[in-house]
Image (tube, rainbow, N blue to C red; front, side):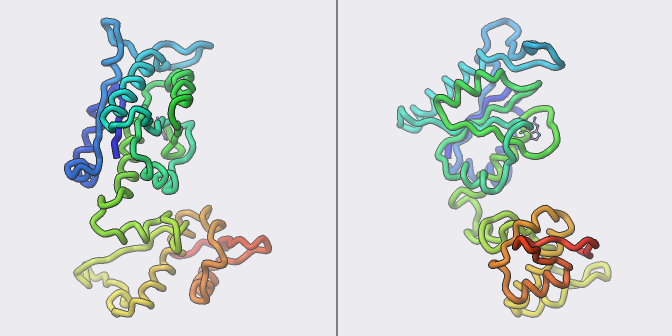
Length: 276
Ligand code: 6GU
């Protein structure tokens, strides 16, 4: 996968040299190109922002540097990919975007080329997004319900979530299977607690069942802890659980946690809090 990032703080993206993403780059699985937006300004001050039309606080990123940057990234990338018609999917991180989810991470991981346009200030002149959308798929994405000073950290988040889904990037192909939010049996369930050696630490022991070697029992226990943790930390996910995905052990575990199946066929948490 090729990734281009245009930013006024490319240094903010240095962590892409580390850990999983850094290793994927070193192995040639990920080809990351960082660009300085100011390289496409032509005034002595390398101006990238101006005051908003209509008034209001803050500054807006000017369209001209972004237009030249996108044209240049498009030309350079399509040439490098050896396909004059190739276009990236443009990801625009913004608190006004659609929520970034595991499903979107998977969709982005299926693309051969992503470009990121993280903004500072109050955002980018809208015409840049419209211009881009006429030439390539555009995804405006928010990483959560809070406001960051700029989109660079969101780029780090999105690239890391996408990179670990690329074939061969995680050592073990099974590694995503039990992820919270992975599609399948564990969809919409948070992962439960994990333990490693020693079996006793500061007077605290590891749950017996994990030492039993009984894999069926262990899987059932883990699923029960996942139900409990989801109920505590993300009760909003409970309504997404599918009754047909629950076997008799699941039903019993849910019953004990006070989860009931409503007339509408949806599960709902009990009024009282459960012990995680
Ligand atoms: Cl993608 N950008 C900014 N600036 N703030 C955010 C965000 C993105 N997602 C949540 N808050």
